[in-house]
Image 1: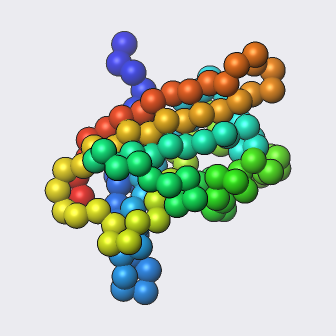
Image 2: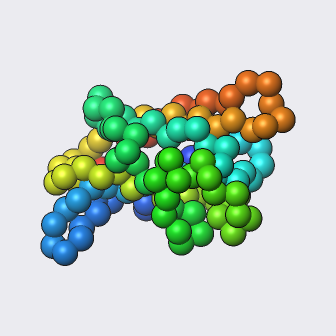
Image 3: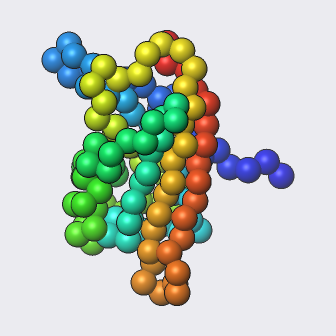
Length: 131
């Protein structure tokens, strides 16, 4: 049986605001067996082409609402759950975005469900191309 896709192959792109490239985005799935409230997300560590992205430059969009990782820790509303099997959008603030060509993305999802005796970490890697 093939594993389920983690990344949305159509979700990799640069972010352009007012004609200026301000970062990049990707869409990926939660690596957990059920949906979660955003408050149990402890971190989403992004490394692109060997460069670690500062935590404060990572944003998460779920159900049309965007949060910093610090804001996620306070989001308990069922309106903004990251459901199993659904893609969330991660936006990385990076002046100039990514150059055209192939890039390697390594993301660590770190969550802490209250009923688990330990946090759960999942590494998600992918190579993708920016046109």
